Amino acid sequence: MPTIRYEQEGQQVGCIEGANLRRATLDSGLNPYKGLNNLNNCGGVGQCGTCVMEVVEGLNNLSPRSDVEEVYLADRPANYRLSCRTTVNGDVTVRTRPDDGAGKGSNSLVGAVKSLFGR
Image 1: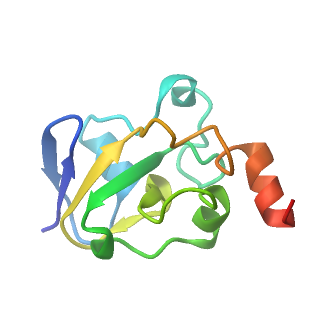
Image 2: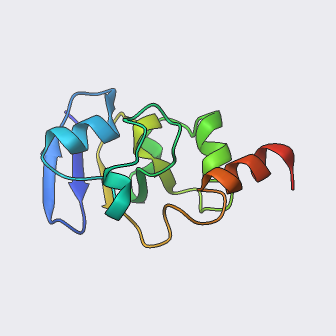
Image 3: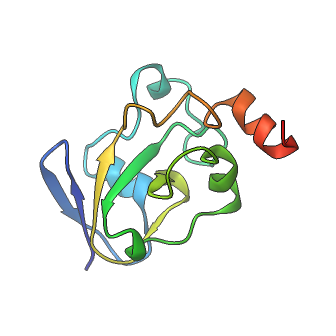
């Protein structure tokens, strides 16, 4: 059974292999969203880019970045993931709500459109 360690919260939870990172986080009582994103998120369908997590350890134990993530996270490091688009296949340590995770650069509606059209 994979273990998800939440660095900032000092907690860890077990999940089934293939679990969705966002869902596992919410089920454990933790919050992947920051500030107003608690209200204006898309509910986990990969359309808002607000559930960003930074993977501290175990990046190879997650599914590869999806096309949606490539758009929303175009100017973020490879260890930044949209938790709603990430499958957990082994132990991982994450940092929820990184300071530069959501609402800036490509990880905003305007930024995502620019990434899609190359401007």
